Length: 106
Image (cartoon, rainbow, N blue to C red; front, side):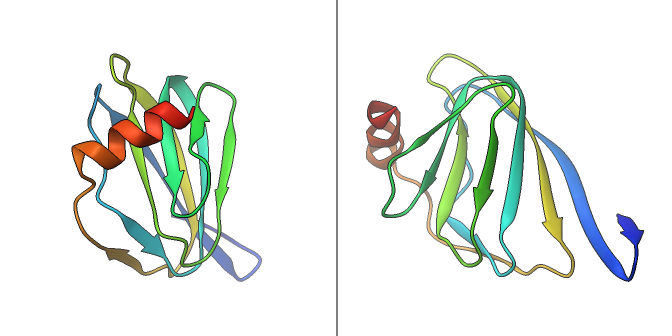
């Protein structure tokens, strides 16, 4: 955890293997993803899927329902940055159909 100026944040390195994905989820204070390597997808409900590739910085708004995933044949690594405290609410599993649909949107 990083602290300074009365504020705090949490940064985590996360790696996804090909086809692996989170469940749908939300963060009460949002999330910032900094893509380091590989290629994957970030899908925010109601929006076009976002290609996660090195150098991309993806902002996810507070309480936006979303998932992150590796590519069909590629891994993807990102740093997740969130202000703290920041409650994560885990929701339903991302179906194979939802994952495949997000990949087609790229």
